[in-house]
Length: 357
Image 1 (cartoon, helix red, strand yellow):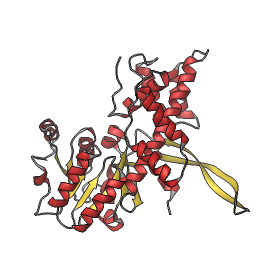
Image 2: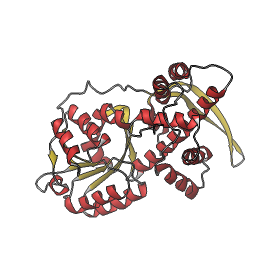
Image 3: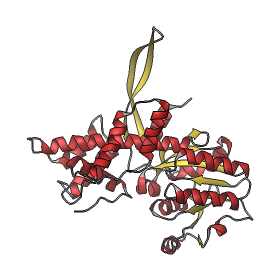
Image 4: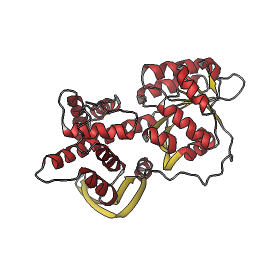
């Protein structure tokens, strides 16, 4: 049974219950009445961190494979919270940057997987062939009872295959969806964690809660569930960004002279749709009031395509999510203000630079 209240709390940082909603429906011709909690939700960033947790209350050594924008910032976050973190990257410049932050690095993946101690290895690499290749190498390199985490945006179907291979070797595999972008990685992310419940509780939960935003560490269930939830999370984000883009384009083209920065700033703090994305929209409009400096070209990852595949398999209609992906693909052909808004939001989240004119 999925605890949806807990799931939304993990996604949104803070939830404020504003009452109950009675919903009547018919099940098999019988009228049934349900009571739902109604929530006003928003992503609480800057996040409140667990700084009152006792540093050094636990000792954990973790090795980060992939020291790019996400991996390095996660490593710095861990280091700040008492984790003995080390790292590896095939790129020498990335290793040097980590070393400059007093993070020990390794020259090869073989050196990462020690035969003399229990390994906890977090892989933070682009989803697909690169991640799958590294994970398959770790199957051969790691020892029984080691822990391997894939914290990227992998296809949950790949995660299930990887987990099977690792289970045969006695290795514990966790698929952890990571939300919050570069800022979240450094200052407090949202983690959606699938894998062995006992190992999670006894060996990972405390560390993850220390580097997460408030309510940001969610155990989702068996292997595959973390990446599946992250996939759906990304698809929801596509739909939300699309509605913001369309709404601001209507405001921009209307007869009224709106200050879009002030609109976004006010709505982000006071309205029922308040949230982090509106804060980012206000930041984007402050830098470039009419978004004339960027192109309305919006990138699209594979995760929402996977979501549409899953919806077709399950027979679940998702018109908003499907259309939002098609609009991103269309943005590569047509330049529109709504696409500029979405491109600017992705730029503000971090890791997805908007194209300049």
